[in-house]
Amino acid sequence: MSRPPDSGRLDLGELFHRAQQEMLAQLAMGGLIEHGPTAGAATERHWIALFERYLPKRYRASSAFVIDSRGNRSRQIDIAIYDHFYSPLLFPQESAVHIPAESVYAVFEVKPSMSRPLVRDAAAKVASVRALHRTSATVISAGKRCSAVRPNPILGGLLAASSVWSEATFAANITPAVTENKKHGQLDLGCCLEHGAFEYGRSVRVSLPEESLIFFILRLLERLRAMGTAPAVDWTQYGRSLRSFRKHQCR
Image 1: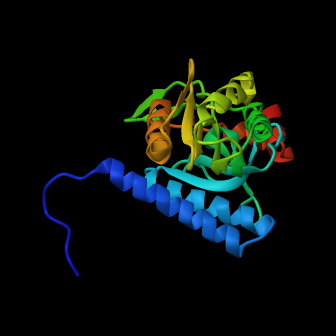
Image 2: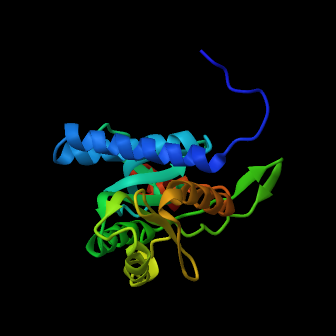
């Protein structure tokens, strides 16, 4: 078996292109083997595996519900990216993980294809998470007490293998589909493996089709880096649902 050279240059674009083709092949194979709800779950697993491959270990990705200290719960989220080091999961069940809203960095809807109605549905899922209340507590860092930080906006997006549009018309159609969702429902990032990835900031940027995966991964990494560390959860706020906590606070 030949070994890779010890030195030289790597064609990063080609490596990401091959990873994109591998992802498309896995999704196609899953579509042939799985049917109905199991096909959707298999697609989510492929995307989760992709995140586990590329994201730093401080993050974890999982299908989940997101909850807050007031007892509110989001719609079921296909993939939530959340803090792995400091934030415990609440009520971890095999069927559904429940994540404190403070721990969440990003949420993504996963579909086999992108279309304007599915963009709207993804926006509604994202909005159900952003509407949740998030606490923030003081922390001790290097022996010093640091003030509670203001939580950053949670990123939202849509992931798919293809779209109802053609490669030539994808950018022209995804732009109005994304920009019509305002406030809590804004989609920040999306990846259509066959036709291109998008990022929405002041305007919508759309990648070339052959660079959709690398564009999406690199922009997601940059957006996560800019968010810093998730705020510390104020667990006393979650404890207010317990009589013991309320009794203690009344003294």
